[in-house]
Structure formats: structure tokens, C-alpha cells
Amino acid sequence: MSQTIINIVLFVLLAWFLASRFIPPKGVQMITTAELKRRLKQPGVQYIDVRTPMEFRSFHLPGFRNIPLHELAARARELSKEKEVVVICQSGMRSQKASKLLKKMGFQHVTNVKGGFSAWQ
Image (cartoon, rainbow, N blue to C red; front, top):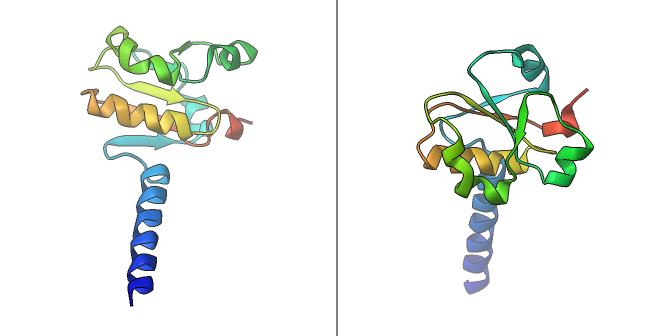
């Protein structure tokens, strides 16, 4: 009986962990890299790359600013909360974390690029 309860608790914890990692944050728009290519020249959009400075130097898209994920909370004041923020990273995981953080900080329009640069073609 107790083993069954432990298994249920472990399953619920695993499901919660996976959901928190892969389900898009509430209020964050998700776009593909193809959609990003169409939108890159839009005026009034803040494009943020949350990879490390070394990753950014090796390859980045024109118009993107590098604000590494670990610096985002401290540097968020450099961004306008009213303008759209498009966030990208290498695989989409760090940008998803960044998107959640920005929403919690009161940013109105946050967009995450699914798959990040790994999905770029």
C-alpha cells in the first residue's frame, strides 16, 4: 500500500516537473523560427538573445541584444514593459525561463521563439 502511494507521489512530481519545463508560460506567445524571420524587421519590438556572451559572439541575428538569462532580472529595466519582447536562446529552454520571468516582472507582450537557434534554418 505505501509503495503505491510513493509511486503516485513520484508520478505526480515528475508530471509537474515536465509540465513546468515544456508547457508555455501563461500569457507568453510562442512563435516558430519561420514566423520570426517574417517579423524581424517589425518596428517597436525588442529582440533579446538570452544565451551567454560567448554563444552570442559566435552567432546572432542582427537586431538582437544579448542579455544573458542570469543577468535578465538585474537588467530588465533596460527594456520597456509596454513594447513587445521577443526572446530567443539556443534550444528554447532558457528563453522560456526568461519569458516566464519577464511576465512575472510585469511585461505585457512577451514572445518566445520555439526551438531557438537549433530550429533556425
